[in-house]
Image (cartoon, rainbow, N blue to C red; front, side):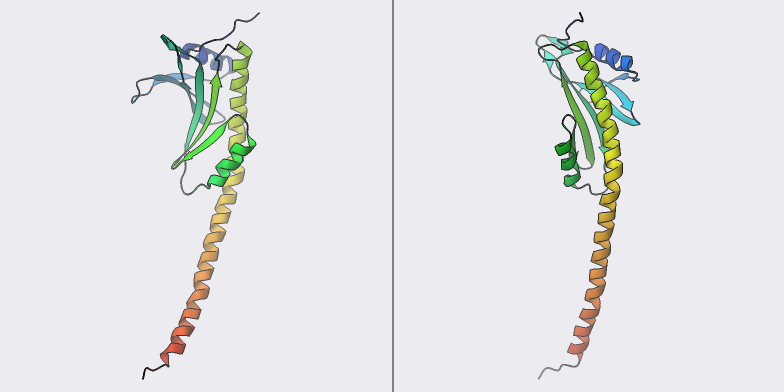
Amino acid sequence: MSETITGLTLEALRDAFQNVGYRVETLTDPVAGTSYLRSATAGLGFEIRPGNSLVGDDQNFVDVMLVSTLQVQGELPLDLVNRWNATRRFGRLQLSPPFLAFCLDVSVAGGVAPNYLRAQIEIWDRLVQELIGYLREELPKVAAANNAAAAAAQAGSAAQQPALERTAEQGAGATIQ
């Protein structure tokens, strides 16, 4: 019978990700001074950030956050983010312009089987692939809607201009007595 996981270390997480086929490197956050892991899947880089430490043990923690941060250029409708979050159960998008963060929390509080951790890694991988497909499908729609709105605004201003000219022409013949 497999041993129950009740706490995580960066080394154990690195091994778990490497056993599934990921390349993983250990880095230190220069601002916070904490270590974390970095990897990638489907061409999208992500970080594995430790969460809450076990009482009295700074090296072991009970949860971890998988996070990928993308930089957004231009306007990203909040509706696009909300639609993703409403249709996906585990991973969530957060928009904080100019960044879009994709996150998944994994907790081992209370103890979990080793295959649970592997399943969470597989869920993350699947969600990242779905996110890439979702953005590839939805972003062109946003661009098309923005282009249509810009064309409509431009056509509206062009339609207003002749009307203004007609008004000016009609007023040109007016006199004040």
